[in-house]
Length: 307
Image (cartoon, rainbow, N blue to C red):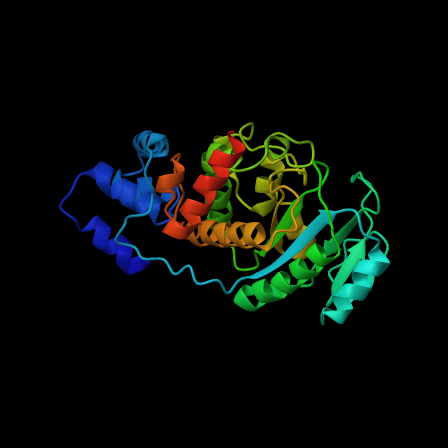
């Protein structure tokens, strides 16, 4: 990082361009002001505002990020139409370690089938994973989805799919970048989510959260306060205190592995990108951390939901 900063400062270019590159590296505006403008924070702030209004990524194309999926994650599948006892039996027969339990938020070393009073339908349940890891975790999730399909498990508008991504390695700037990136991309994400997941009591949007409050946060608790200490957000920062994760609550309920996999990979890309910079307001085609296959999946999803 220090070498990159030195290289940027030594460039024969404008102050504005240097400021942009330093902000893209994840430096705070105060740090950049001290390095480039002799402490003129207002100048840096104006450059920053212009950057946020652009429809391009805020990480230079020359910086290559590794999106290999190795992160720990967890998943909560809300659904109905199968008793917990029957589903547990079929999951065990498929080699999945699972237990039927009462409502709780305790992380287990096994899958657990618990109750959830927010769900409607016959034989409702929430299936919660243990800590899963990267590609191996996705393979186990795929097996679970096969069993859900076999048992004719269903979802409705009361159901959601919640993903916990490991956040133990986040620094404060990563948290800020992640919050701002999701806020900037919220309109695009909404377009490939059903109407029931765009504005929902259990997954409130980020548009009402002040960008200034996010930027001003001095620690994770300040950032949680900017989110109203409310776990019912599309991005739930409250999960960090209990699980050392960040929870993404927006996805609609599903038993479809393809949908789950693409969303998990989307979130992995978002987090990887947030470790280096902020994704700006943009179109689906220009989201910098999606490959062409993922863009096609979400493009078709958007078109289907727009019918």
